[in-house]
Length: 284
Image (tube, rainbow, N blue to C red; front, side, top):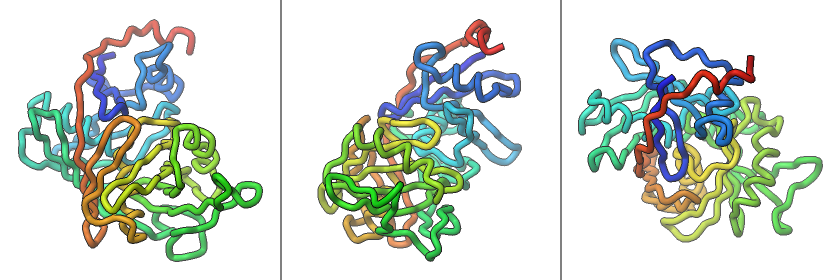
């Protein structure tokens, strides 16, 4: 099986480049993404084109399918550019989380994606809270949950996929890995959720650590960055242009007055890889 590997600020994806239909099982997807027994990646991107549009499926390492991925969209845009399927003009990509507009710059090394509108409605996220929105909402896990003695409050938002944004005094990988799984699988989120632990730095800067639904701790995430920036603007903490400092690098996010969100960041091609069928032998 042929794949092309790309990374976007340390968040890496394999783009399926084979000609046969993609039919891997969840176990096989997990093996491909495994960093010791497979190729290693944060997920697999599979083209799902129609006669009229570029389409994209986004598969997590646990075999589940994500509605949208900002880094995945930047990587897929670069893949289309590398293949000569797009040039330097804007083009549309259809995902399960909605249609976005993408544009490639710098000979493929930078991609800007118009990610759509941040949605704060509990019903549309979805989050099972009986209120129009869930902003500064106190969340309990076997009682009140505190971080460094401060009661934790969540902010729920959708970028075409669900997000749980938590503001903390000091964010860290350890915090994301400790609380991320609890929040990802909290029963209030029927489709689980991506989780962002956000430290406010200034009117135009946030530091974010990310626990990604279906993938775990990750160095960066485009939709998570858009979600964190959107909530920060909604709460009046940031202005329109926001610099996101992630473990894997920096993303530039623009949140307009109507909460339309644009993301711009780097993409790097890593390798073309031919996966040997022997990798699946133990799976039966």
